[in-house]
Image (cartoon, rainbow, N blue to C red; front, side):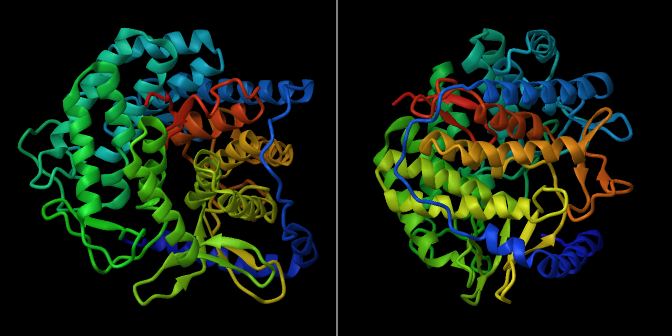
Length: 494
């Protein structure tokens, strides 16, 4: 991936700010890095008046975010809250609207949901702006997943009809020598093809959505297409058992030899879908692959500071463990906890608690209480963790893990941590016309510290997981539903 000067600037800011944090938060760090108590799973507490109040507060936040989108960007892909405008960066498929459908339905925002669903009928998923190529991965998890998640809660035939339309359009990307999808698709040009390489996440994060489409539509070809991709990904030659390189050729089905190994960007949801395919469909090969991946990640990618703060790093080409963790990787403790429960692997729950704690520390150590995009880990007697990219992009991964950890352990500290994060979002990211990403989580002066961006995953994931964190455990229970990587709920059918 190319690194822009802007990214370098952010990373330098993060490094400088991190050195400041290490000196200021030394005492705080001794408190934050105390290891969490390990305990057996228990039932989450019932819905107390305090949790009802918090749930309602998240619902109000969803209304505020949606109102900004509806007023200034309705029908566009995303709201730009500072300039009060919309963009079409995903191909003008109304991506925020599609991604938010099941969140609106779940939170019983009936008027907003009805208006959004009515607009779905008008979207032409066979077209995009001239010369525009869409991301097959993003349209699978946001558009197809969003429609299927809403259909799961609503069962309106319109939603299934439009989901099939999306599925047929995206299926063109799978017309390759291996069956692996091209990462980009020009939907206006049937003869177009994408680049020869795809990331692990791009190729390996479509099985839940396309298999679900096959099940609810009765169109077996979608299932077979998804299963073929999984088989090709498994057949590619690899050096490390249980670990998969970040890039693969869609033309040959062979992995690139020059890539790193990670559970962060370009790879994350591939590992997630191993376990979730097993839960959804009961196929033991995915159970075996998931267990092998967890064992490899635990022994190869997990590191600890001298203060025993656990993290998931990256394995470099030369075998070094890069002691940096992305916000994206904070989904992993939630996945470990889910696997621990489903597969009876208590050791994975212990690691899940440690990693969830680390992800919360990354939030709690900053001046805004919001988590940076990347953190790195050093051993200097201080906190041992510091931002290397100080942006906050309204991402969901940490609150996703808090939700799963609470549902599985019943430990209310995860609700408290989630509420603390939500209050920070309200204080620093809420603006007049929605919510905005932050340039630097180390600065509390919001002048020039906001980005004109509210990505669709804030509506689909961040607010949904916070809402569920404060909801009764009977709302979308984890033994009845699987959440896609974009937090769209599918009922388990084995």
